[in-house]
Length: 328
Length: 258
Image (cartoon, rainbow over all chains, first blue to last red; front, top):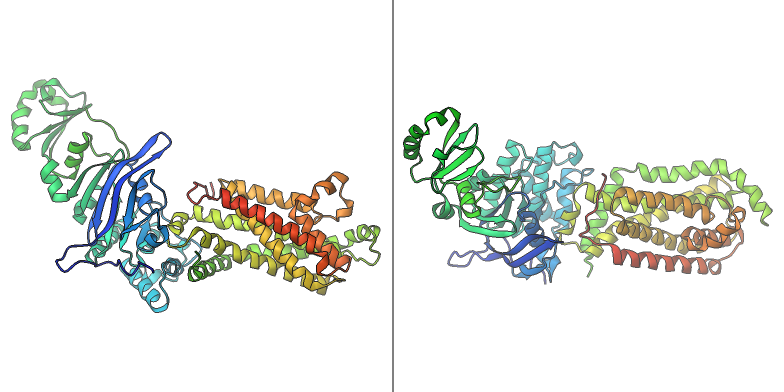
């Protein structure tokens, strides 16, 4: 019996509790001596968005690949809709819609044929297939392009088609691996809007990204992944309340002078970050004491509690999407 | 387990992709026909000398060129896999509900059919325009061509399995075609090949295909004349299939077009 109809978006019990769609338990993965995932646990319910946040190389793509059944974990287990992905990959995949990081579409085929192919593989037929192709094309602004070959699309249009393919069969679990990478402003806005809509309709969405502002825009739950581990997770507001801190950040045109190195600060070459509940007051108190070093001051920034400050608190490093460098 | 509905979807998809760019298939049909026109007279003396006084050259050049051009299917099947890497659709396909076997069959079956159709067109052209006279049972050629097509397609899957880049696969496919074509007696009559080539020829599928064609077309045999070639081609197909089964890893990192 196919389980694809058993777990469909929108599933909630009579009390309004959302059913768990994704369960990741103790997943480990190493490539040779490089540890990509070191014991990851996650649970995602239908109707929710989980943003996987981490710099490049943190393990996001490895985790998404394992959830989608493209790679086997060395240890641990992944269940989608209660189905063990390693034991019954085909059944589990019927519940999953994956948009990998790299844009993947059949360039010689039309937008319609691309969508029809993946809808057909997911088991959709005739009227339902036509309706879903039409609906997903409309949601991503692809309707006027349905008859156009993918090779003739712009980069942004291809990215929208790439995302549409993942959604065409209305999967219970949507895996979007950095979906807005390389997307233009319009495409990015449409994708974020679509992700919100998917969650509203009951899908569980795992949204891997290294763009902090997207998570804030989506108001998603967050799992911060760093060096293969989930170092913090929870609702965005809770995380900011728990780990976020305001700070004063000063940048000099030379190494930070001793006078600016207050207890508890973190120093990164010419930049010093001073955690403080009242950055404006701290600035008013500190700046007169800089003396001759004031000439070397290039910028003064008040940092409000944000996801970035959460990342700094839990990892000890500034969030840099493309690099993982220690601070101070 | 294979889902026939999913297989049907993949088959239709592969046919759609092939028809979006029909040029390779058309070239593979036109190329041997053009070649047949100027090679036919050159082969007549060799056939006469090897004991076929009534031969006109078509008996060698038609099946020879058909066999040679059929070998291009090895290249086409590797392209069908490596294109997925180039388009970054391979992971999408793997993440779909389709099984590995459905994906391989979906790519292989249309190429087998295409190769059989290619043979049919070239042989018919040979009969109509080049005076090809099939002295034995033409029906005996059907299982021979089918087995040869399956053997070549499985060779293509095996080549895909062992190669990591599209360039490697193309090199294997093209060199294999020329080398196997020459040694197997498709490029020139088997009788004019040096002794050492004739000794090693039976390791090539081309040799057995041409052996079967010669038995039926020149020597006037029926099904009995193609039994041994069919058995040899089937054995090779099994070997290629086993290599593919053992080496084709769907999570291998391969490069489409570097």
